[in-house]
Image (cartoon, rainbow, N blue to C red; front, side, top):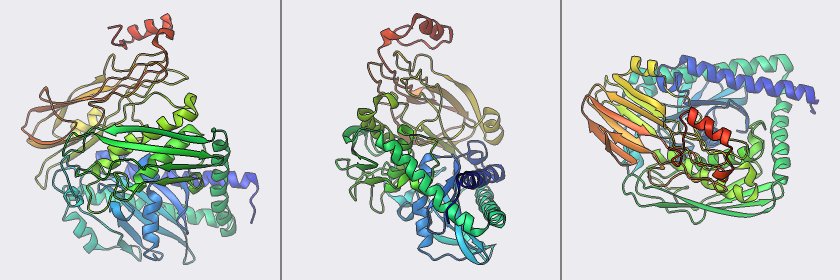
Length: 534
């Protein structure tokens, strides 16, 4: 069945609206500040063959890896009325705190698609509160590992499965509520897709699934044709794996050939002892994000967007580790460096489309208590976005593979025994240039009870690089009671301890001498002086 352009556009927007509504249900139904305030979650719709047909614009590292999770569920031959939960990075997950729930959508007993939610839970067990230990060396230390498990049958939750999960996590009441919020979001998908079929008829909706995927593929292919064919290479490094501070190289070769892109990570480090290993699905997410960023981000993000893109990494490498590698930092930090290195490769082909390097880290801060009735707080902290051909970088924002909000001070202090002492932009942290890099952030929190603090951060040693003559951004720093601590660390602290995270600034773009006098005057008035001006 062929759809006319008007019908296709109407149904496409309705599908995206359903994905957005799923996200609203999840965010408003969750109990944890990490989901209801920071919105560290993602939602999407898939067809019966496991192809993404719509997604809400949530977390890039979640969404690009979702197809692996759906395929893992398809391998279990699901039936209507079921829902499956998983988080295992070796069977469709990303890292253990990201819990995925997949629910079949059926009409008259036939599965026509799947509603999918993925949310970062504040704790999933393991050796430290928050389940992101800096020194983990195997997956077993990072938390409860869930392969594809049937959580719901005949629309009823399996109490024994839920009890098993809750017995292995801190804050079980919060975990239960967040899981139920995910299930409610999936139920909303089932309800809305059925209404869509009732309104348009199944033949039209089925044709729309194929059409939106084909539409995205054609649009991305048209964009790729505008990028010069060639082989483009780049490399970068991580600042240690939490076990040692030895540099970890990442190398990429990007081959653009007509309407296809091949991305090969041969030459990248072998998997490491610490937790900076990233499953191949995470590397794919980073690549997909970059390709959309350098083409047209408004292309509907369906399976069609990714069909012209192939991603390879040697088995047993940093970006395709084998069990039982630790991976919790790979999802949040290695994914950021993959984004940087692939952008650098594309900068050879389309330099005007690629900004100077942004902060290149999520600045993961986890604070929690080990008692069963305690708390776990998780936050990623924004920093500087790199200067661009079109203008200055952006101050104090999330970049790359994360798209979360912050936890408002009022919500943080109401929910946790913590007090925010300082939350401000870092003057002068953006690299100088014709277009200045965005400023980093300084966030200081005093913990009012004995707790465990974990930090997983990057760009503490190597600055975000400027582009086209722009200066590098300022590196970040982590301090506990004013004393510098490593980029990746887990430490027990006493009540009254203050933890400070200073995030990196973005690199500058273009020759600083080309920045106008008026722009420099505005910088000084805004307190955004460069190091040379200060």
